[in-house]
Length: 265
Image (tube, rainbow, N blue to C red; front, side, top):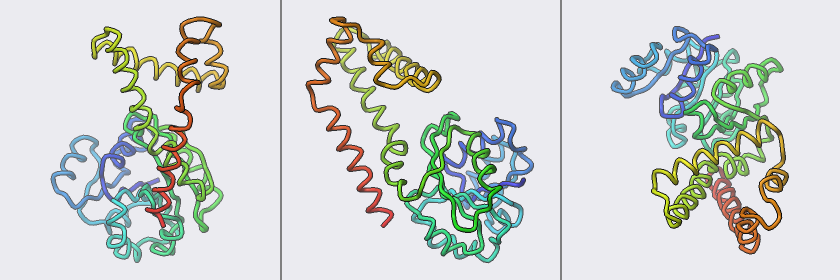
């Protein structure tokens, strides 16, 4: 399998690096295209992959293509790619807001997959949602899941759910960081240094996520296991329960999903 990247931005680099580090792909079988000479030199030096300024070269030398250019650049770039992209190409687009209908119109011969990873791809812990185009083959599903597993966890969903995906996992890292920052500030108010409060909060968030994922315990059961009656945690939970925090978080997700619909419409 030969893999090509149209664009080498931060997300593309994270995916490229993970494919190599996981052993899923050899550097010699990856071709990365970018119009910026400085970026091509940087990517070649870091990963020893082939680089080029010509996207046609990437297309001709690849079976799987990651479309990793900015959404606003798609209208200009895809018509130039289309003549070389055939049914042999499995195309994974990570461009936010670009629908399967749009991608299949612009690349009518390609087997198209729309993928929405998130920031955690940079540390191999992405949450990626994907949906399949009309020409995708049965064997492609396994290939896509295998590729996405190199940099995190993936789930196949209906495209109609992608605005919710954008809100929950796409924008989610910012929301979790926002909550963590508030907890750190509260720890500082109680006398901790910023450095110590950040270490305590980060590791607690990370460890809690691991417990939830690895043990499959529900959030409600985890809360119950930590909060003994009339204990310290119960006291804090009483404040949260009396607040409108659930409503606020719900409004944040709804606003994000609404904006996603506006941008992709």
